[in-house]
Image 1 (tube, one colour):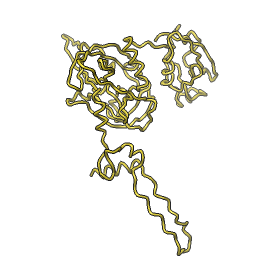
Image 2 (cartoon, helix red, strand yellow):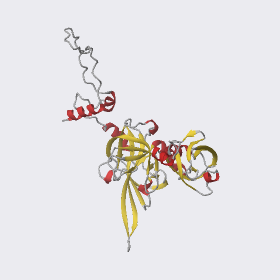
Image 3 (tube, helix red, strand yellow):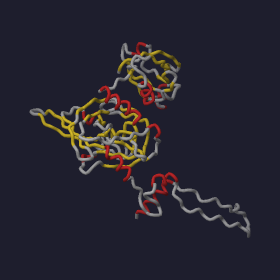
Image 4 (cartoon, helix red, strand yellow):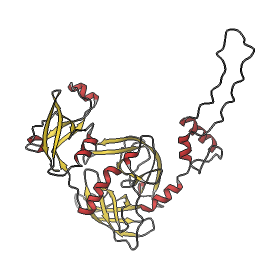
Length: 368
């Protein structure tokens, strides 16, 4: 049975084409001396499947691939988080419990999780993989990326997460999600999938999340704050959101976005970002056609603060920002990533499209 599953997997991924034969083109009359066709090449595992199988499984052995070693190396930095909050009823108050996941950031007890896991709670408890349990204090949080940092005082030196580069990942790469799904006992839940998309903008009730990794690795309630890991065992994202109305669609904050935020929270307890004091959305081909724009990429301004940074520079609602200091801003993710690389008070040359004409303005960035 296992062999048939692998065979289907190989068939889906494709296999090397058989060696070309040298049979002449058939003629309308019989030709007696037809060359003997070259033998068909033996079925071999495609390189991409071989890389996934590694040495733990092969079509010949009939074994499915295993990621057990990867899980063993990562789960030691995955913590379970339990929280208590107070809900106020009509006549009395009652305590509610929730759960999430954390990633050990430092050997002295800094742990990253999601902001929505610890939002409006009165107590936070962290359970480590070694069985130790500690009360945690909240160091700081960032609503924009839905990240928060906790601090515990461990009795021993803790193992530390190894980060990967999310910028090097591609759609179709295999990833593994670990987390405290549904608060089930017995260690983290492990799921396997691929990267379905990169650079997603995801609307949430707390505001949009930017530069998200979309994956079909199952992410359930309780996974929030857990690691999304590449097959080399490095964390390339932090699981954050799932769509209850969809199947096989989960999202994680990319490591490229998360790391500067985490470092700022640990050092300062907050994240200070520059802002043009505008709200923007992606320009899509549909929006460009509907508005008669001669640009297909950029970010369109949907709201602007009166007497704000962009307003003072003459920029208006409906303008399409196409670059900052000459660097293209193809969408919201690129725009914000570039914008947040500046400091508050910096001056930025903004190129924007208005009525299909290109303009430039100098904007002095304010604090978000």
